[in-house]
Length: 487
Image 1 (tube, rainbow, N blue to C red):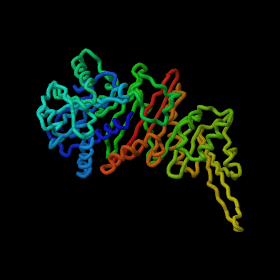
Image 2 (image 1 turned 90 degrees about the horizontal axis):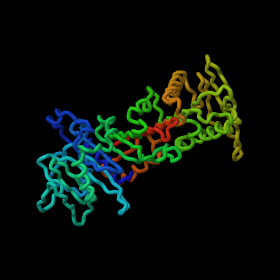
Image 3 (image 1 turned 120 degrees about the vertical axis):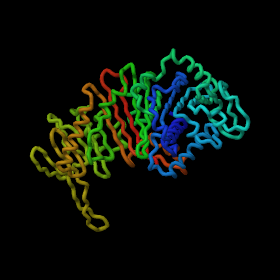
Image 4 (image 1 turned 180 degrees about the vertical axis):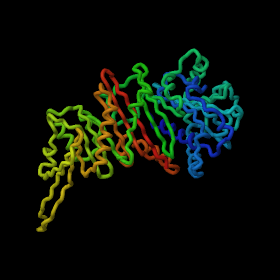
């Protein structure tokens, strides 16, 4: 997806959440309409590449704790976006014009080798195009496509139109406006392009539909071939100054809908244990997309682990990292058990083992003397610990007590339980805090932050990705969640 369009959508979403300073008492009494019922859908032409739909009632979202300074900053964002699009409100305020329905869609333009954009939004009955353009001359505004021409200014939108039912249609291409009008006239005879997808998202207020997925840890053409029947739906929500984006790969012909993800996204109860990195995958696909998130010891471990000829390539692995503490968990193979002592990194380490009930604890340690500049020094290497418990083997750089051991075991088997029995591919990666910067798709935020650097900052707080693929499905089920912190 183009950063320009996605950036506008993200900023508009934030504006819709934060944009109004006052709560309207009458507005709060109105019953919110489900997104699949909004009238604006009839103005969406087919064959769009990207479609953003919003019926967010901002008055119901405003948090009384939001400071005026933050709201003022979003006012600057609003002005910047509108100026870029070619809209000039003059002395008007957007909350006095905008009437809670918006779509943004893009369309391929082979002649220009770039995408055209179509924006439709509802305005209040008493408002006109003149309130949006602030031009010196009067405009015949209803049922006429008007060219937007601002001397010495960039305007992304070139044409604008107002319908009799108070919808503004603006586009970079005049033909798209004509197609939108034609589609609205024939809407009752046609089925909305994303009608079935909307049924599972009817309680959402901001939805983005595309055929292209966000950059993903799991994105690999070998396992994720492009399919025109696949739809990626992304929802936008704001909680405690965090913008939450959830993306679902949907395919109606394969019965992959929102309900499919209920079990897949089931979050196990981690209580106070909240690791910065949590990775569950099989050995076969581990190093393909997770190398940036593991340390040298873990990488060496997997390389040697994979060299075991009798090792099952679908062996499940769980990694948990917090600060400098890390651990690796996998199921023991009683017939051909992995010998940690055989690791090259632990070749000269001393091993001591202690058994408690049915659990076996081992420590691998090493101290040597080294001479440097005629001085004898003691070198102490990092200890490595191993625990065999309840069919699992845990390897870590810190000693784990009984309570944490129980939580780790529960987490492992909960994740395994979520894996469908026929699935040959299942991975779940949850990355938090500074570790999120290791993921490539967050680099786009640098460009976005540059544009708004004096107003606010958007930082990556957490990323969750889950992929599952079962026989005989050709394409996987893919879920992605991004939490962005708004500073």
